[in-house]
Length: 59
Image 1 (cartoon, rainbow, N blue to C red):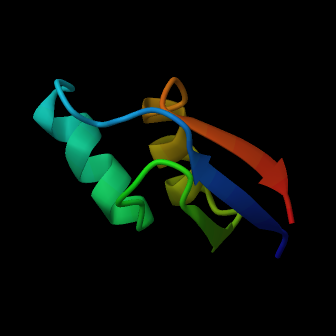
Image 2 (image 1 turned 90 degrees about the vertical axis):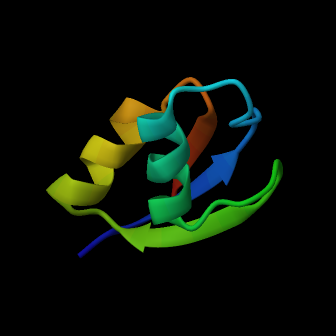
């Protein structure tokens, strides 16, 4: 499977609890942190939920 890099570019402060939990589930804790995930429907759905807080690129 393909990999995708996810980078947090905005803060999760003052965001709804479900968005904070989604960032945590993706493994993102701070702005500028980059994590790599497999490109699965679950991961893509989580990224879509917080797309305004993260940037993505193919790994």
